[in-house]
Amino acid sequence: MSAALPREGTLQSPPGWFTRWFGQGRIGLVDVSRETLARRYALPQSRWAEVRVPGTMGVRIHYTDEGVVDGEPLVLIHGFGASLHTWEGLMPMLRQRYRVLRFDLPPFGLGGPLRTTDGRIVTMDIDVYRDVIDGFLAAVGVTRATLIGSSLGGLIAWDLAVRAPTRVHRLVLIGAAGFPMKLPIWIDLFRHASVRWSAPWMLPEAIVRAATRDVYGDASRIPEATFRRYVDLFHAAGVREAVGRMVPKLDFDTLPTEALRTMRVPTLVLWGERDRWIPPAHADAFVDRIAGARLRRYAGLGHIPMEEDPHAVAADLLPFLEETSS
Image 1 (cartoon, helix red, strand yellow):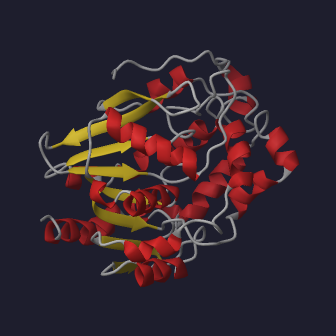
Image 2 (cartoon, rainbow, N blue to C red):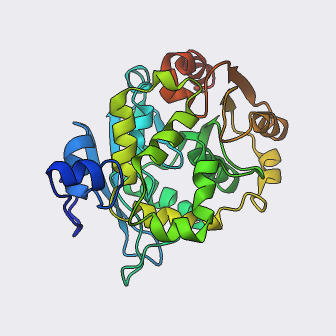
């Protein structure tokens, strides 16, 4: 485990007009280096964990470990295309009482994609993410925790609760994936061979900005700094190729959602009523299958309500954590 910034042999983005129009900005012809991203987006609390994943050369995962040192651990897992920064608005409220860990899922955030032992980018699927979450929790010494997962992170969270219920104290699902659905248009683009081929070399900033607007119920809430972060991190070295490999393999038809009926973990389901990425009706599907699950909907909020309005989410999350603490 190390607090040092990661180093990766990636192409440095050139400065000046070329960067603004063709590199990190409008067109996206040049990757943003990991070193540049770490300088921009690493937090004072940032740490790095060496995580072993079978069949790969391992990965350095960017994470934070904040709050009460001996407190009950909460593990926050972000969704597709996001990073641990998506939880920033909740952190002041959560770390007052709990030990709060959040981390970047590969290939997103500051950590980058997984690679095989011969250097090829790994195609991410639920089996690989099982190894990632298991490896991360082992690396930080967490054997049992409350899992709070958004979107793809929600899928990873409930899957762990199903396959290893003694490791999960409580479960919070925010716009969680899992049931059959049509992919959002901005993800579905990567099912097309032409996009998969061209995206690693050219992905206009406008596409990433449009996708970011789409996950908010009210796009006017998005600060320019948030747009910039999503664009920069999506243009990080290897991310676009990794997404191109990952998306065609996304299959929600075969996930073990019926096994949710066996769970006895206290569960809170949170959903934005203006979620354009995963149908709000899926909230009812989770509640129908998880015994005793509670549901809270948010009028006007989108796919990532904890980022769009963290205080509204905290108003439901904190009492749930308090009531189920034992």
